[in-house]
Image (cartoon, rainbow, N blue to C red):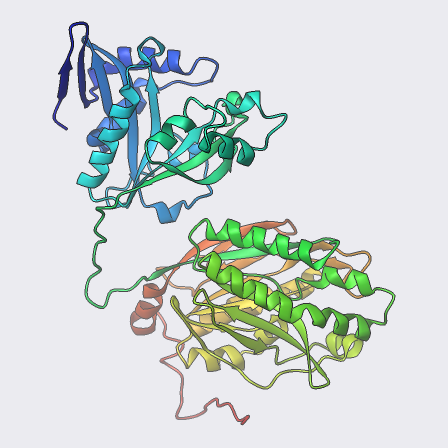
Length: 513
């Protein structure tokens, strides 16, 4: 940027880009500004920032001395989403997260020497950042903002209450009040963003300023997103007090996974089993039929969440009682508000004996805004005919919600799912439950290791596993899959399982009407 010079009778103020020779003044100002916090910028940090993004490193010089600075990166925000820490967004202070082709200017620091506060230097830095954002045609400025005034009120106010009081000017925060005055809004409250920030109780505000002059870059003709982000929920079975409590748990995971800009989220088979504790005095067939009474309500909530959080949801499965028959049904709830069911076709002997479940008689391929998908519930993935029928209709991702109680039962699902990915040249995502339900008959223990599998060829992981969870622990798994790699595999793979079938000798067809 060009130097901006302002002179008064007492001060000469220059706004300019930082240089490595400024380090001594820069370090002094940062150290004094962050008294009480651990860590400081080292010469190698400044050197790296100036190497990768010199335009984004700004400073203000007063009478020849650097007394304020603002540091920035450009990031592809979809890779990090709204749930991140300072260490994650800076690549553990190595700044490997900087992406010249990204869409967001991310502010990693702003500070002012304590002796020069009150001169409106912060406003100059913020305005310079806005000009840079507009000049580079980035859609927004995002930053994690400290709330150093919160520590004084932490015993009586939640972070949300504190932020609201600052926003309505009932309280003053030296940083947040300034950010509100400069047209930033709070997107989210971050926890453990900067663990060493005791004044903020390690909380931070995720703030954003939107560039109204941003012009979205037009994709090339017929270009569409090839990398799809999957979110897998390894669900902890636990006692819940009510259906509302279960819905809150569902929303927590949808919110968390959507924060990473995921395109899909997958829940396990019969994840709502904890609600059966309410009916534990009933027989097993009656208890699960009463559980089925919640299915419409839960499906409607999933549909609401899909739209609100902008994510396609595979609901896992739930029991559904229809015309005197009990089914096991999963739902695809799209982010456009539509939904479709997929009935479990093959019922296990246990489901038939204890619950009187029956299988469905329809196999569906689902079109979504991120490709063609299939859904097979647990036991169904152990029948290779079903995924092959879906593959013949262009399936790119197969979602498998499952429920297993032992490791050998889990391995049947896992190994079959992995085989389906290889033989059908597609990705397969599996999600199961962990923990135990001591007060629910026939659902006492669970075993799972959720995962995303790929075909086995050179462009894919050598073990044909994109990502996998820690066994028997509640967590979410976020994984990216590249659909373009499937197209290459179909036409030029080392082997071509789909193309090389001897259809002159055998064929597979769906005979149900």
